[in-house]
Length: 279
Ligand SMILES: Cc1cc2nc3c(=O)[nH]c(=O)nc-3n(C[C@H](O)[C@H](O)[C@H](O)COP(=O)(O)OP(=O)(O)OC[C@H]3O[C@@H](n4cnc5c(N)ncnc54)[C@H](O)[C@@H]3O)c2cc1C
Ligand code: FES
Image 1 (tube, protein in one colour):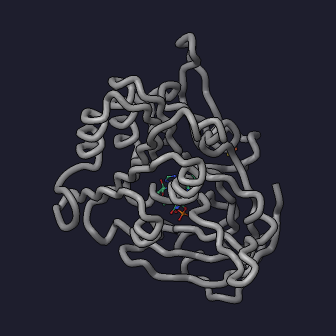
Image 2 (tube, helix red, strand yellow; image 1 turned 90 degrees about the vertical axis):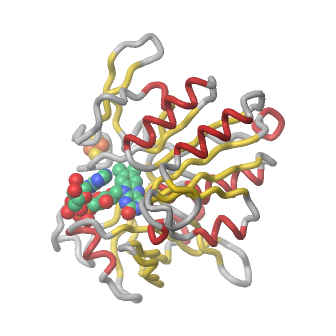
């Protein structure tokens, strides 16, 4: 894990309070795995408020145009409060501290090439963040990813072009019906796994708690393995403060509390106690 003062290279306003920040961070870009995150100091100086760093998943690794070598980190950031507002108001050329890569990402192995037919990726809003690098890795393993991407309205479905350019199958759903199917994203996902019940599918999800709970339930009904990327408020991100714990059950059903920053943020969905949402 590296703590580096990095330069903000670019910031793109994607609409609906979403921004894509590109950080010049080649060392960290080389190390990142799908589903891992970084902790950003939302100010140029370590002494400036807010004191605590904020966690953000790495959406993509930017590359040098000529050499193709990793150059930086692309982060999708939704402006929801003090820290994120400070971040999205920074100007290209400013510097900030970036700690990472952190946490355990999605399980992807070269063995999947022969065993897995398909992967269903289910995203709600900014929950799309960990799924782009994952989709790319799966395609490299010859696994076909199908993305189910939902939001309240069309403007919430940011960065669609990234996935469409990969040539992958993408199904959209919006609650107001402004794009794709009208309703919750879990509906097209449920229909899909119903129609493909005989296939060897693995499920990956990130989004609002209730969405992930529904994805876990639907996957369990079809006996499909499912991984979820969880969010919790973080203090230290180093495993010490226990501020980020989620209530889980081990394989024997015994209660246990796992730290999102250390054991996560990606968990086997069957282990999560979905009745106890982290505060
Ligand atoms: C592992 C991980 C990866 C994340 N990846 C992304 C990402 O790629 N893009 C992105 O936009 N956001 C991501 N988040 C959420 C992001 O960290 C929070 O939105 C951010 O910390 C809010 O900081 P703030 O100072 O702007 O908000 P605050 O002013 O502290 O709070 C504003 C609101 O945001 C809520 N909030 C604060 N922290 C979190 C949190 N950690 N999770 C959920 N809600 C929170 C508060 O309850 C409050 O309602 C991730 C969180 C985790 C734990
Ligand atoms: S944030 Fe401190 S233990 Fe996870």
